[in-house]
Amino acid sequence: MCDINVSPDVNDVFSDLLMSENLAEDQAYEKGYEVGKNQMVDGYHLGYHGASSAAAELGYYYGVLIFIRKNCNNSKVIESTNILMKRLENFPTDNNESVDIGTELETIGLNFKKICSLAKVDSRYPETNKTEF
Image (cartoon, rainbow, N blue to C red; front, side):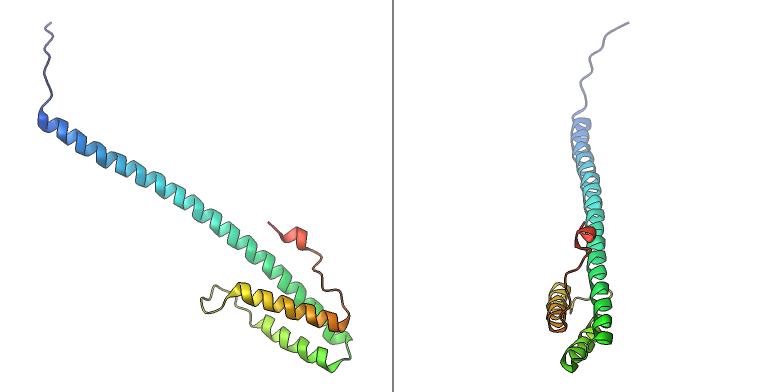
């Protein structure tokens, strides 16, 4: 047998060089896509747990407000309770860009504490450590 040393064609070398860039680009795209997909899942879970925590707290507020409305004789407290209950009932159930949910939650929490103070009811949410994720 003969050992023939054939040098590669210049066009093949350039073609391989160009194809290696495309291959590297495709691999980088796939890797970036997978990283982004995983981050999206993490964001989804973070949002899901945050919404669950907020919903549990709002449900607690609503239940306490029902109790206050039934057992309080102060007309100012009952009026404030009814207003806050309507606000809770109209709280957005989906992501609405026209409503700042964080500010709304904070305002509801402050009004709830004010009503509880006037009604002489403990306003602390007992499940705080169970709903933090």
